[in-house]
Image (cartoon, rainbow, N blue to C red; front, side, top):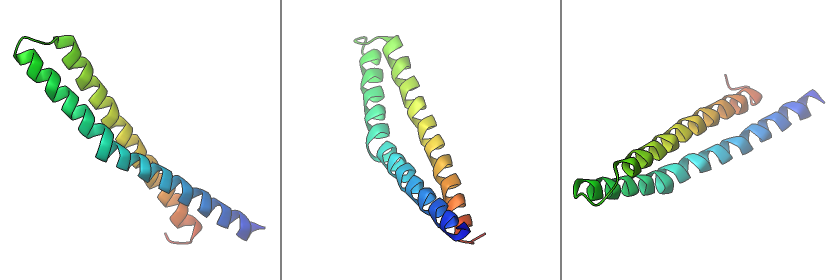
Length: 91
């Protein structure tokens, strides 16, 4: 029973690792580049007098929130990896 429980915990941690890794990848490859592009466009429009400073600041805030999400997802991935390695006896 203990062996099954340990195996189950390892599989759960492995599943979590995959999910967190997918989120980090999506943030890196899709969401953060789009946020940067949007911020760059808004900053350019503001410099030309065609945009609103509040929009620029809001876009920057959204980018920071995405970066914070990436940090959180990376942390959760690493914690899941520790649980997985522990369940396999790799300390």
